[in-house]
Amino acid sequence: MTARIRLGAIVSVDEAHYCYGLGVLTLRVTGIGSIEQHSDGCWLHLRGHEQFDSGGEGPERFALVCLGAVRVVAQPDGWKP
Image 1 (cartoon, helix red, strand yellow):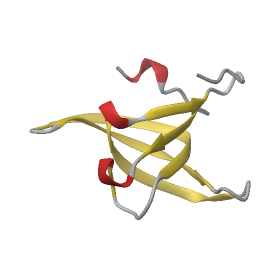
Image 2 (cartoon, rainbow, N blue to C red):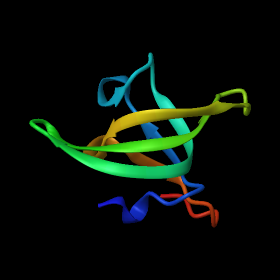
Image 3 (cartoon, rainbow, N blue to C red):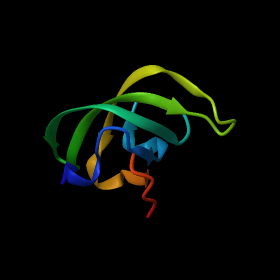
């Protein structure tokens, strides 16, 4: 399931599907952790830098994301869905 989420990928997750924060999370992935099975599906531990609409990048952060809700926006090789 995590094969499409690679290091360097830009992913997006709606607020209801990650812990913790406000609004849509857009993250450049720098680390992929373990998967946890919960009653509402599989959740994945990610590490990365938040990407801002202004083009800037935030400090590295951790997020627990619902795997089924992650959208890959771009891959490090330039591929976009």
